[in-house]
Image 1 (cartoon, rainbow, N blue to C red):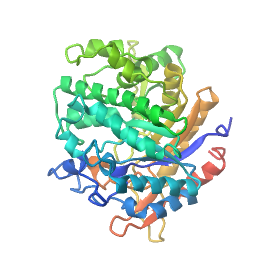
Image 2: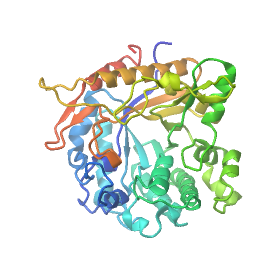
Image 3: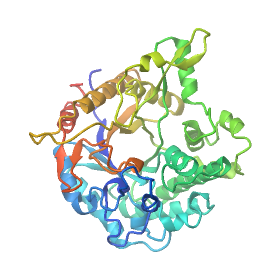
Image 4: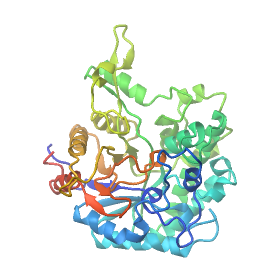
Length: 452
């Protein structure tokens, strides 16, 4: 198979706080990321998302740019503080109308919108009431999901509840490197985690109840991938086991989130490891969390190669990482992650796999000829898409791929220092310059992956 299936979804992605700006425009309230950016020393270049890419005011041009690249789908996120400034209760019509107009603009341009409800920008007023530690947080989120679904589900069929709970919980509530900047005892982190899982489950229920048409719903967690460096069946099995293990007192695993969502139970190794930190929960909670989903979405940027050492133990294959490619985020370039990650996830959960984020930050600037020649990004995406295409050829049901990100934007704690986009953004003038990778990706889409 030298191309993807005919209905394969080719997309790009972005999120509300990272590109929209307009932080105080049309009734939007403060978010935890606005709050976090005000803390001295938290953002590497002391920037914030108040203006970002000014997408809120330039969305029509941005949609036209996406369509010109022949991208078929755009994964966006809605901003909770823009839609319900108080977190729950009264809806801000101007905020909701923005997404109305954005969806219409996308559809008119032949681009299918895919909506993520939570990409980390909780209203600060809800954080002041305890945020994800408040037992009411799952109901707050379900109410927000209802409002957005009632308004947009007549035109939008593909939805995600939470983006990367591992990150907004782990980096936001345990490590303190992301908003809201907390360093909580792990028992409190697990309480926030449990409440966010309840929020997912309740949201799915209310979305299906109020939808104007049948929806396809998933979540978009981090895809934690450990992969074998050979086809040795014992090593493949060890890599699979490692990919689905809970092995540290932290948030970075697959199963602590996916097993409750899809199996209705926490993984046994996690329950054992976290025994002294667990919040109280019962069977009713797990029934709330475990709702039928239509796809397994994962954000996969890199993976960890494994090998057997001379004692027969499974260890990181350090030799294979020696001198390997590195992104400016200091992440390893390991294309096999997009073969083994989707394969393992499909085998465990049995749902079509959508890669909702994959990409790299690199050292990009506009050259004297007015172009941005990001050859490294072209190579990175080509290698990863080849691995994904091979996974599909070998039986993994791969439904789609979304490059992160359509354009350079606010990269959380790094501010504007890291450029993930296929389109360069001059933050002083807001000029967009498609990079070489954007035109290359257009050709890949036009061939449905055949030219890879």
